[in-house]
Length: 302
Ligand SMILES: Cc1ncc(COP(=O)(O)O)c(C=O)c1O
Image 1 (cartoon, protein in one colour):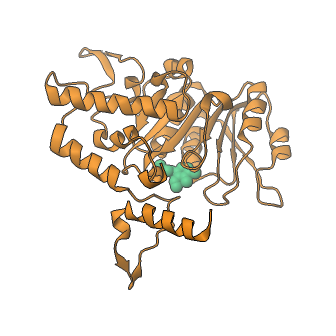
Image 2 (cartoon, protein in one colour; image 1 turned 90 degrees about the horizontal axis):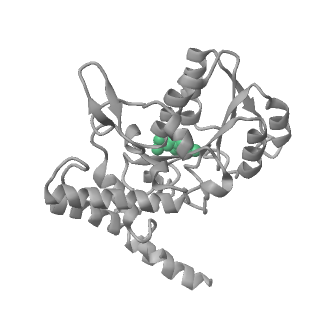
């Protein structure tokens, strides 16, 4: 692409983002903090407005037309996310508020129920706090032990050291796909294969990878994968957890409330099928809808 073509494309993309049509500190706004949160293109803003003006209502509950429309759009978005990460089954996609909540879901549901004193969790020193603090809490409560993969001289994942850390005491490897601090792309295919050979589960923090590259959950064979929508043009307050179906089925609920129940009695309840078992309360309905857009990045790039 020539420089002129690049400038034309950049201008087309910028035109899609109303927030960029302003001056900050006397200069046209140039926003590069997309790894923290991306800006929202017109198509997303319009979709939010259409929802609130056209069919705002609660999902899965009402017997009326608006609720049916909202539910249909909301569940269509789940199908899109399932295709986006190549899940084997749409029920493997659980909506969360963000990636942090998705990691906490796994930590509290799977970690608290499965980990025993002396079990080991392998993280890396480059993890985002979201993929560190929940495991610190789980380790404190279960007596499991945290181990850390260090960096090589070139500030990358030290695969050789990882191989010396992992053992049959390792029950979980929780690792970022692309580091938010270093930008390095971790060799997750190899990490996952090694972890599975030792019988450990793998949680992949894909927050910084899914906005930029194709991520195929089945090909990678990760057990869980988490990401946030707001880093790829969706509104804040929406993220997702992918988990292998059998594993999600075996996990106890994380939060209790409406939506996640099948039958409720005064002294006990039974739980809804996947994915609703993990989706207590009214979700961020409008926030999820932009996933149904043909392109989740700028339409100018589509
Ligand atoms: C690698 C990584 N993991 C997790 C998170 C947490 O995302 P959220 O704040 O949307 O939960 C971030 C956010 O910057 C991140 O970059």
